[in-house]
Amino acid sequence: MGFCLFSNAAIAANYGLQLPDINRVAILDWDVHHGNETQAFVETNPQIAYCSLHQFPCYPGISKATGAGIANNVLNLPVLPGSNGEIYHPLFTKKVVPFLSQFQPDLLILSC
Image 1: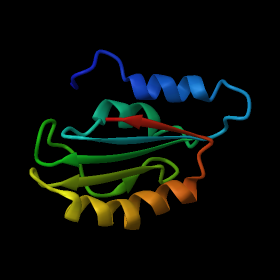
Image 2: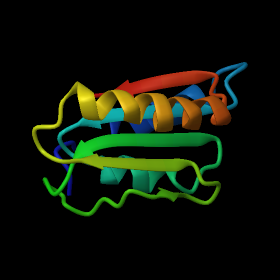
Image 3: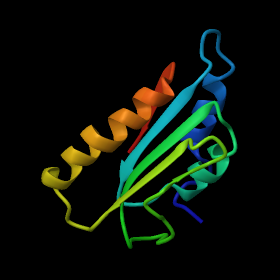
Image 4: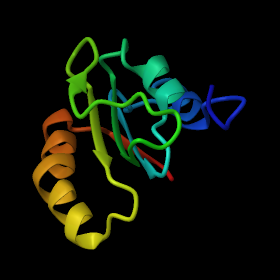
């Protein structure tokens, strides 16, 4: 459904978990579109956290501003098209940083 044939971030996260000393991986995804396929791949794995900042209601138009996943390991933060730093900065400081800090990943993958 997305623009990628494969979810490179999810593949990288899964590979990262195969490496020594990597027990938890977080994916931070921010761009226009919600990474619904990445979320679908990782939301059932408590060793991977996924955070998406994306424009809504842009394609695929299915995101909700909720935590999800089997271990509350998904955070979706939809923003309106045209949002700027005044919108993003508080989301990062009040939502993204605490979410990632609580998860304590050994590896952070940026998908943008």
